[in-house]
Length: 174
Image (cartoon, rainbow, N blue to C red; front, side, top):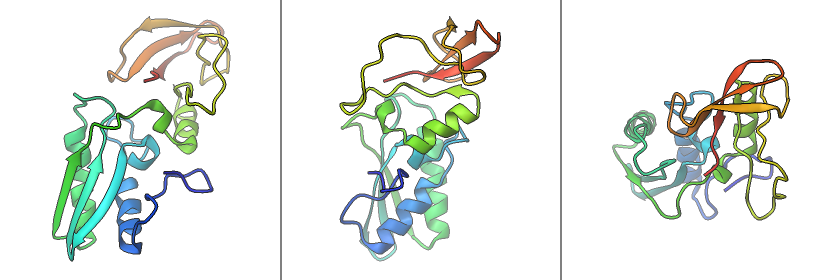
């Protein structure tokens, strides 16, 4: 869910407490891409209070075997316990699967600003790219080459710009 400002928002029908808890959990930085929050990355799905002091958080990993899920879960639990939730359950939800289209506009902006080429959108409202070129986040050139299909994390590829010769990560489209 995205707000009118383009930032991640709690699901419709959330109570005020659930919305607050969603914002707190969503502000947790991603352990592999600390420039992004979990809400900007789009992995935080729902936060539901089932009883006083009891909350269930649904989290969708970027891919099934994502090693960062445990760190994300621990960080969410800590933040929500600090807010007074005695029982915090973080549950992995695999359906619907996460997609790079779940990354918010602000998240894409932050990726580019930190030198990581954001994934190209491929949702129904976006035009289909006419080329497969990846834009360099340093100089903006589309004359880039693939150096390795995997970079520091499995969700990124390592590329180099032929114009400015700088290497950069590209967050792969899923």
